[in-house]
Length: 382
Image 1 (cartoon, rainbow, N blue to C red):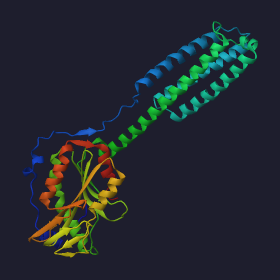
Image 2 (image 1 turned 90 degrees about the horizontal axis):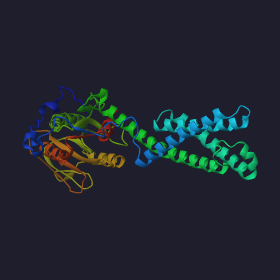
Image 3 (image 1 turned 60 degrees about the vertical axis):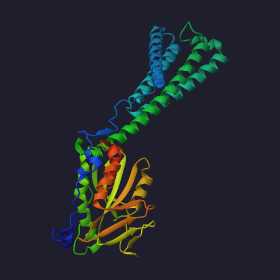
Image 4 (image 1 turned 30 degrees about the vertical axis):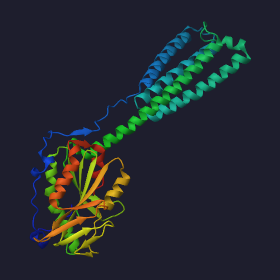
């Protein structure tokens, strides 16, 4: 929020808006003491689909059973059959490797190592099956010398190996895809939560970098600063809704200096509110965004709230973003405002602002959308 000096003559001469939220229907609702936060912090272990759970369990059973079977054969093989021991040892090691790789992927631990280990298994297993297939079909006598499980024929062993490798690849793909997607989602939730709940505590106000006025500041800058100071206590009345958070000083995408005074966030609703301080007169905001004062276009006044809302909405289409520009009176004299219906921003009096924004936020006034609030907090002037 912009700041103005305590001795600023503008700040002392304008009439202060006196509007109380109690007169509005949204303020008379019985609100809960605490807001509902979405999304809740996800668990550490990624949930899997039912089919993936079944395939993963089947893979574990087959892999552990295979390790036990081949290890038993290895231990029972005579010391004179070195070739058979070698094949049994390689198969057992491959089964252990793929079991470790898939389990690490399931636990989202040492992901890079798990990927490298599984790639090693896949390549070695495919090459081994290919070599075994060639031996079985071209030299059955040689193959029979290295039969690892006596009660099975070589062809059956080859088919079983192919089925297991396919099962391992399918399970790896499903587990890795679902766990990676969940890990990305969880990381986003954690980052958003740390942003909007600093040190794990709920904050109802977030301030942007203030624009400090000095002797070189112009009249319009001073008016803007005072207007934002007048709007701040009005907006605080919206905190009656437990899900509401106020963020001051919202930057406009594409501009280094222009900003919107305030964002009021509840649920996935973001109300962008600019503050204006105008001299008495009759004002019309036309369909092209021009301010017409007493029948003449005033080139010194512009309202950029709608532009900011459009640019932010383009970046975050999942959020409901609307804009208002609240007009405060520079002097205690008549001031009327009208907005063309085709304009995206509404010029409102302090009373209209508090009523309209409150009514728009009320349906989600008891909710905190962590991502929506993160968006507003990250959009502050820096």
